[in-house]
Image (cartoon, rainbow, N blue to C red):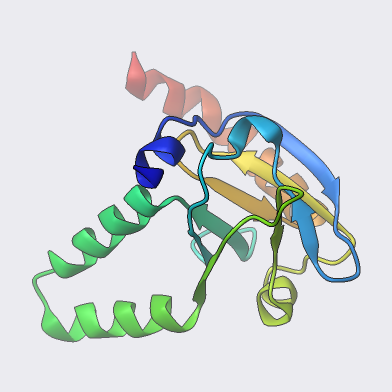
Length: 151
């Protein structure tokens, strides 16, 4: 039941970590699954501030794949599958609880010697500090309006 172990985790808070010369970044202890699983790392280009890395546990990855399969247009489905397929990898944490970021993904997200890990409750993102500062400012400007949507 390795997938369930990751699903029991809530990815919350913000952590800043150094990235070593092999592009390994430590994952917060509270975010680590009890059993070994493969996370999916995707170069995520859906934010105005720029690209980051979105990290999904197996259940969130399966949900994204199901959402893609449910798209009505076969052409759009193929485009998004090709795009996400070419911009993603599966990765396990090493014995020290670090995830290794491939060079091309680190470059796309502008991650060099520092990274900001941001919890999204059911998944998390890895940002360069500069891009995350922009995201924080943009989110702060929208937060009062968005909070009203949940009550």
